[in-house]
Structure formats: structure tokens, C-alpha cells
Image 1 (tube, rainbow, N blue to C red):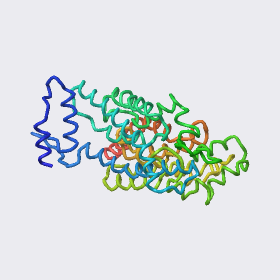
Image 2: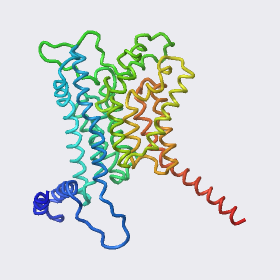
Image 3: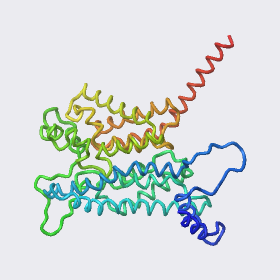
Length: 402
């Protein structure tokens, strides 16, 4: 590694040279691979081996289980659609990699390209935030979303969702969810329905199996809204112990959905990595989960359709709830910052996520809208928490003075 570092040092372009972009690219690569050369000269500083790049890289590591499972599940769902669910494991991996990896490559290539251009134009080093966003964007997308849409959404997320606010650390919305929301409202047919979650591309001699629909668990449940309980026996049966969307299948992730959002097990492995390293907020995760379970319990108590009667635990295992809880709601920039604020922010996020998906079948995946809404509300939550603490201290001071 020392030889590589020396080689990188010799190749360093001049910062004020004719090609500032070349130095920006070099600086981003060097500081990602090695410890930055800057050192403190005076004053008191906290010295720690973990900088922002290492933090972002740890989050990417935590996302790898969801990515790997998403690759396999993409192939698995494809072969189920063809009536070949017993296809070899590596065939599923190969097909999934062919469909998923281009989404990841486009996301990183386009996003980092925009980041490099902004860094060069502003004359500052590469910002590290997109290391995570570049992975989150493809994982929260349907597998059949066109690559050019991923590119456009990524540009929108970096420019409008982050750079206009000042770059990494200044954005008020989660960039990955901003990309997803942009596509959801700009190209709704490519982000919802029954045709985008499972790749049904076939070769000569193959055809889609009879009875295959490509619907997700939330898509099926949305059809029950507005209908009396007991009128949707076929849909309800899919959520039984032996059904397609059983608790076990939902926990393992063997169901259709966005690339990285189906497996609660893979997501919880990532959550463990974030919690052990101290990067993820357990307060937000736990309160988000509690909020979802409470809202699911309230719906159970006043159920008027089969969607409302769904087990609260089942609610949090389907759709993007777990993925949003672990990787989106815990974004340290757009989430609440105060200790009490994190409890309030997480609880309301989980509460609204289930509320939106049940009340409005046009938005069966309420997690995206719930987290974006709470991103906007986070500064206000922190403000009132701080003001509350100030008032409490003033009252204590008055008592002592008296």
C-alpha cells in the first residue's frame, strides 16, 4: 500500500493548474484510499481515526447484505414468473447481477460525475455523502426502472436535493428518497403497478407462467381498500402461514419489491453493523418501529377492510418499512438531532408510514412520503425540544434564586 500511496503522490495534479477537475478527482480518490494529509497545527481538536469517508464507507458495508440478497431475489422472482422457481442458485445470481449492477453503476457514475463537477467549480474537495446515496438509490428502485430514469433521478437528487442547499451536511431531505420521489411523481407507471417489480424478460422458448401477476404485497392489499372485510379471501390467503406473503417469507424477503427492500433479515444485519459501530441511531430505529406497530394496532382495533386488519408485525415486514427505518430515517443530516427529538421524529415517521399506506391506496408505500415529511419537520421538532429544555432550566433557576 505504501508503494501505491507514493505513486498517487507523484501523480498529484496541481490544485491551481489548468485542469482543476483532475485535482478534484485525484483528491477524492486519494483521501478515500488513504488518511488525508492535512494535520492540525494549533488549538484543541478531537483526534479520531474515523472521518466522514470512513463513516460513509461503513454504511455502504452495512448495505451489502441487502444488495446481495436483492441480486439473488431479482433472479429468484424472475424464474418464479417463468414457472421455474427451482432454477439453479447461480443462474438466479447471474440474472440478478445483470439486472441490478447496471442500476448501481449508473447511480454512482452519474452521481459522482455531478459531485466532481460541483467540487471543481467551487474549488473544494470531493464531498463524501454520495458514497451512501449512490447505493441507496438503486436499492430503493424497482428492478425494471429504465437506466436513463435512474440517471435523471440521481442528477435531480444531487443538484436539487443537496447542492442547492450547500452540499453534504446541509440538505434538508434525504437525497436517495428525493430521487425516488422524483421518479414516483414524474414517471408513476415506472414506479408502481404490477409490471415493474419483477423482470419478466424471456428468451426463445420461454413464457410467463399462467396466473403470474407481478404484484407486491402492498399492491395486493391496496385492492382491498373500499371493500368490506371478508370480500377478498384470495388476497387475505396470501398473508397466511402458507401464503406468498407469509410472515416468514416477508422476513426472509422471498417476495417481490424494490431491489434492496424485501429482506428484513438482510436489513437487520445491516442495522447490527450500524449499531455496533455507533453510526446508526438506535433511538430512531426503535421509535420508528414502535410507531409503525402502534399505528398497525390502531387500525386493527377499528378495522373496516382487510388492509386495516393486517397484523401490525406483518405491516412492518412488507414494503420498504424496515429499509426506511434502518437506512433512510437515520440519515444524520436530515433527521432530528436532539435526543428527545429523535424519539419524536422516529415515532411519528413510523406512525405516518403505516397511516399513509392504508388510508391512501394510491400511495401503498407510505414510508417514502412519511420520512420526507419528517425530514421537513425535524428542525421544528428540535427547536421545540430545545425551547422546552430552556424553559425547564429557567424555572429551576427561578426556584433556586427564590
